[in-house]
Length: 466
Ligand code: ARG
Image (cartoon, rainbow, N blue to C red; front, side):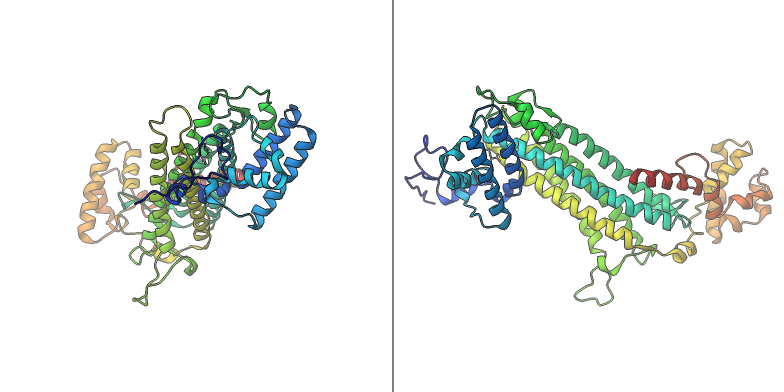
């Protein structure tokens, strides 16, 4: 393919050094406007803070500061209304804004970039964006947790099977299962909180790589932008994207947690399980099979974790092996981070709606509760409490289960004489230990799947979520 070149380089701020323009294909590669347009509000805010600091430090006059500020505000107005023409040959949102400013207020606009490089500028904008993203994700997590807690309370009385290996294990209260997801999401919430502390450091004033010889006041801009601290090292500050990688990891982990929940509920909503009924609003049908009610939203949420994991891998790979300091590779960091935050935020929002509208099929769950010997462990524990070593009790019950299974009986249906024959410690009071509902009543330590533990968990979450 022929490389087209034009000789004039009229629009770029570095026209002093370079004399040839990129051809269209190259310009498209250099541009990131499609992605970093999303940063425009942060860029305006950070530029105003920077200009005010330049004014305070007497690096620009009060009159110039006033022009720059009103110019930036008018550019912001045109960005908001969509009136500003976005020319990709300007490369990115930072250059679009600066060019628009100079077009409006003339040469004075060229003073805004005093003591600043696009490298510390973009690092600052990204941190401002990431801080908001972290806060918004935390809100979305809390909303999903609220939905889970409300459902857990609504179905706090329902006894259902817990599964390990997707085989029936022990009876639990439905609320206990719902709150397991609230726990996972709380770790994600705390992770975002923790990542936010490291995001909340201002790199502005680090310049291109080495800082600046001009007497700027970094603490002033940091404070104006609500950062709790300023970075210590200009080389690291301009090229550090750990905060984005951490945010991407938090998103991937949320995605993985949501995928586990979605998988559970896809299974529970099947005809075979019939444990829950999803609201029609979250399902789709088939273009061919008229009876179909598919849990497509759950499947899409499960699928979103794939992209979140891919984007985490992407940003780590982008950073890997980069020499100090800023390298243009980093321009693509946004493509990973922006996409993953948007997708996970959406997934959390839809998930909260699904939880809020799903009903548990209580009669169907109750009807199937006798299958699968959910009370076998409880029987072994009953025998153990009478002084038999647990390993022996386990064997005794294992044999009873094998026999009952052959006869199509539950443990409660075994005649008392047969139970006595299997173990002479088994007394008539065993009846109160058999059957899923009885078992759930007896769970003892904190964190178990019984009613008093569930009450405690519900109280904890209600207090936590306010
Ligand atoms: N659009 C660029 C980015 O997002 C801005 C930084 C460009 N810096 C440079 N030295 N070319 O990374």
